[in-house]
Length: 188
Image (cartoon, rainbow, N blue to C red; front, side, top):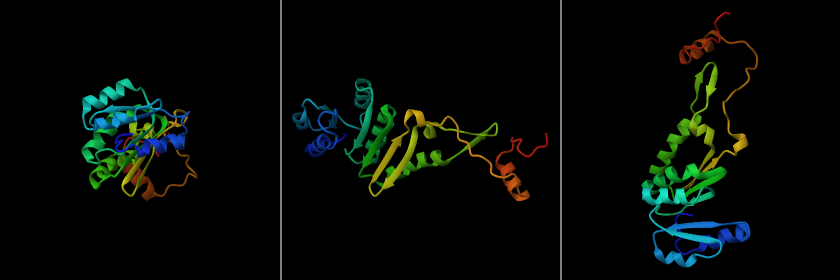
């Protein structure tokens, strides 16, 4: 968890996940948060916008199953943390960013654009890096939730079966406009 504050959410995680099933890392600027260190919880003191600090966290801890960013709440802090820590989120893991602003939503929209974009190469839809990693992005009021694919579900390519074989002239024209190198309608 980024943003330990008074430790209330640390107690919540322990109750929710069970003390035998969880190891928690808390990140905060305030050294007073060190008092929450125990057998289950490790506290690291640092700034979530500090790239050097985050890279040390990334190197020290190999992966996380859940990352909750409830830290400084600025777009810059949220972006920096997401860009550095998301790569070590486990497959199937969840990254939650709380108290998001329109600026952060605009940043996430860049991922949504790539998430929904497709490119056709050799008559197949090519999968982008975002599409290979991100299973879904949910935007709810003041919160963004990003879920990584489970390893077994990561798509290597996208495909959709063609149902029927009748294409109108206008449909062929539109398809050819956006796929100029396609051989789909050329006689063999």
